[in-house]
Image 1 (spheres, rainbow, N blue to C red):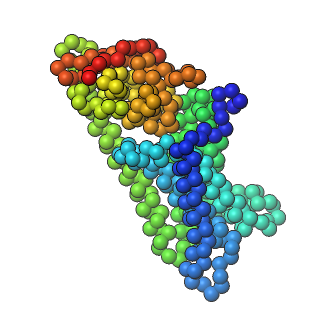
Image 2 (image 1 turned 90 degrees about the vertical axis):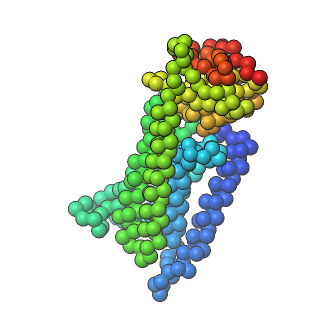
Image 3 (image 1 turned 90 degrees about the horizontal axis):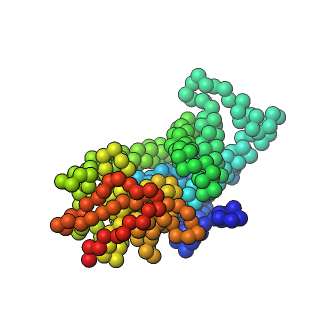
Length: 349
């Protein structure tokens, strides 16, 4: 990491959001540790280990739910984009909280095992043939391994080393990890819960995650169905009216049998590049022009408008496209130019 990669890529925005995340996590944990004992109905006060374990476990579950909601929420409302931009840092924090939960559980339930904590964790409960008493710990262990793996490979070094396709596929394991955590809670904490509150929270979280993804999927399908119509001079297609493209913003054009294209307006000129960011295939058309460069809404990668090249010392390149304007309509040549090809911007004002 000594040449191109820094251990943590912080800027003013990330510092503020990371501080806010840490403050919320700390407030939740301290509040749980203070409030939970006061709702205990048994005569003896709860032990500190159990309260601590429940505090970290519930916090990790809620954080994981929030992380999975950020993506579809950002597709539905651009105001969630700053959270999407900082989601990886939140994921690392979630892995740390989950690890604290696991350590508290091991320190309490298996501390006096003659076979060792980890051996007893994997072999102590073999009731696989029943729901009540099922070894729910294994689901939690799988979820923890997924979170740890994603946290350890969250840096851009691993993105480039593994290639974006493999790295993205690896991080899709988060959905399997979330399902495993839900099973861990359902077969564990819910079995012993005295109040329906936990069941309501878990059910609401699962419905919220699924509902947001379904809603975002419907929006994306409608966008994909709105394929740009052909112009009389094939292969040019009609992208839309000039007025539909705001200054400093982009317009996404969905093409049949081709990747979408993002058309940006800056200083009264139009330029077009692929809508897929070279970093993680983020939706560039949902970003804005910042300091004269297209800025990806996911992680802030930037590209020059005319040639799709990242400003030095970065070397990423995007495919560019030709444009023209006729009768107030923007026409797009859907045939991509090689990545980094200069295309003269079209003047519209």
